[in-house]
Image (cartoon, rainbow, N blue to C red; front, side, top):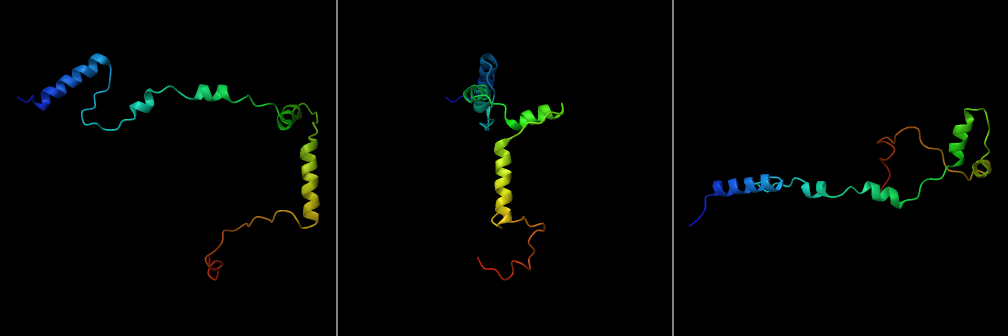
Length: 109
């Protein structure tokens, strides 16, 4: 003796209301499994150390007061890049326009 499907659906619906679960008779994927999990954000924030204040943040803060903060590492980097450019060893300039179809016509890959 078989129980009608409509009666089984009523039973499942009553069970879902009783136990506060979602009623999904078609078995459609809803993402409830993911939504019920604990949030991972607070654990990740606690794992990574806080960011230290850098020279740029100090320059931004004290620049409004008219004070200068010297960043020796950045100054050395800029001097090094200027020396490389003087010897034509620096990075090439970026193209201003997009490559056209005529430019890539003769090239083979």
